[in-house]
Amino acid sequence: MAMEFNHAQKVATAHAITDLLAAHGVDTRDDLHTWLGHQVNRAALRTVKGVGPKSIDYIGNLVGRSHVAVDVHLRAFAVDAGVPNLPYDQLRAVYEEAAAILGHDKSGLEHTVWRYRSEAA
Image (tube, rainbow, N blue to C red):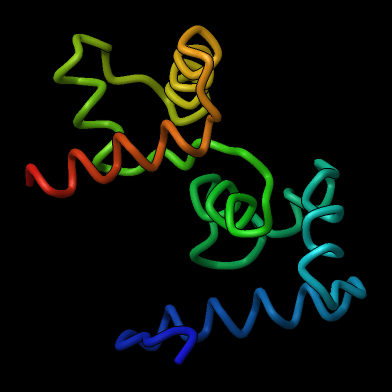
């Protein structure tokens, strides 16, 4: 079982993403990796209802692009660390800069923070 959704909108979103990717000739993981490297394609994904920047960054991580997908756990960790409530792109940049300073992979740092906060919640 690859995905198990109990919400009709999530199923519709998954279908819409699949249809969009098929229409753009994205057939493989490598195709998706390359396709996501173009801002116009990321913008096309944003037209799908239910897809925001976090979803796109998360999909990128799944195909080997190193991104920080900011969610509630990463936001809570940042607040606990004294980082003010920032817009998505700015908070993602804070995490990316922290990863660079610490010498960590961006998605690796994201996963570590996510795991820490999800276990603490």
